[in-house]
Length: 116
Image (cartoon, rainbow, N blue to C red; front, side):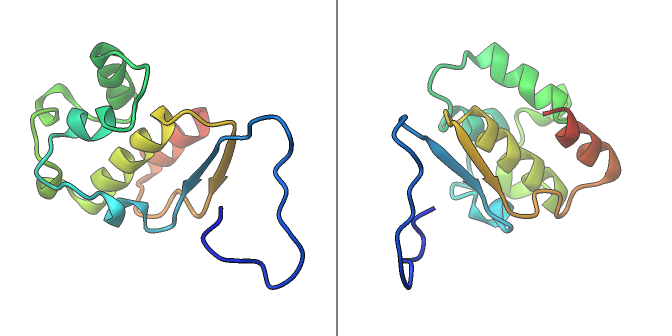
């Protein structure tokens, strides 16, 4: 992912415009602007997503309609993890690297992750 330099050798991802996307173990803590709403947070990472599609994704990730106006700062750890996953999903990529994506998730959220 380019976060560390190799001690030896080189890392090759191929010749075909590989777009990497990395879900860190502490991704929920990496949500930067805690004053944004839930949809605004996902929208900042989405390039070609309409707001209705973002809301649909949030619904699939167990965000109810009454949570859409909520600020990120008011979310629980599990809700932040689900929000970080939504933000991860909308980013254009061809190679996904996930480091323990089920941390802080309850069983229904883990089942939702299996669907994606």
